[in-house]
Image (cartoon, rainbow, N blue to C red):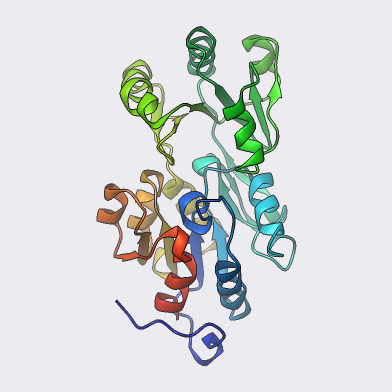
Length: 289
């Protein structure tokens, strides 16, 4: 492992990368789903040295703004705002210069419809992500947790699938269950049921996402780099989940935190400390300068 620079000392070093692409859940956020003061300080210090920090997350933009606002890192001088670039909802919504949308990919409405019918029939909560909104068919404590714990916009309850689908394009849907329910039932069932029409992906053990085929945060990052005129060898990426694999492979340096999944560790250049040990700050002080 490279030597770690002291907090506050980065001004004595030259940045090795012009961009850091950073995941949120399981990476920038600790297990309380918050940005620690140490991570916030490291991001602020890297930014002050001209390194651009870009979020690449499964979250919506409003959730990212809410979370970074808590540590004074949202808004025009922060790292996320409605006028900054970013990769959201697993790369299905990509915002470029001035925060303008440069890419939006939607889930097949038939897959969406089948998932909601299954949700009602089996009483498994399901939420649709529609740009800056979350939509669902029934209230449930797990659905509430997306707002209270993960800081997503509060889900709007719609009376029918038809009404839900007519209220906006859906980029992805997310099942909420136990880790056993996801690995034992939901993942095997939906991997099979969506073949050729959609893919399943997990960022957390107790959630299963159904996304359009070929979805990858890595593709979203690549599109944003092309838009910004930046090459992959100018970027460092920090992540943990299986949805971060392509981003790791794309970056000049991929750092997977120690709490990450095996697939992502295999794709990374180095393994960092965990998200509960301020892994993002550690990666910045160790590798970015």
